[in-house]
Image 1 (cartoon, rainbow, N blue to C red):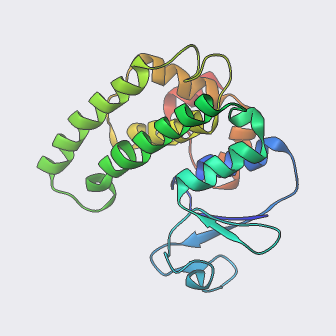
Image 2: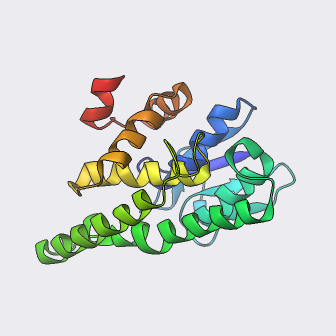
Length: 203
């Protein structure tokens, strides 16, 4: 498999899964403004959507959209998902909430919104993060182990730290906990990302 990613993008979650499982895979960063890969390729030839993640399977099939990529990886690597119908449904429930509300809610910060737009977005995002926290069943979203949904939320908490959005303490703890994983540290290094201060203090 080959993952196309961009540092700080939501593709980080899939990158972490592929790193942690330890099976061989290729990866390549993408300049999303120019639609050019690190090797000089035309990213639009990989996917006409022009954004990451794009996961190229061994048979040449391409999976796009973060929810779809993460769900596919959870079926391929069950430790990151569930083997029963309700569990898979709950996983999709969280992935969908994060994608359609939280991820989208950061748009003013990434795309030059006004200070008023950013302030309003920050308030709404904090409320959405509280919804996520309220549904936590333990140290992670679904009790004792992280799933692909936890990793997507983790990326969103990194964005929150970057843009000064308040998140509940249990999600700060989740960010630290996931950030302590060796595969996560390795992926952040590979993408050239600097960890938030609270993660650096704990590592």
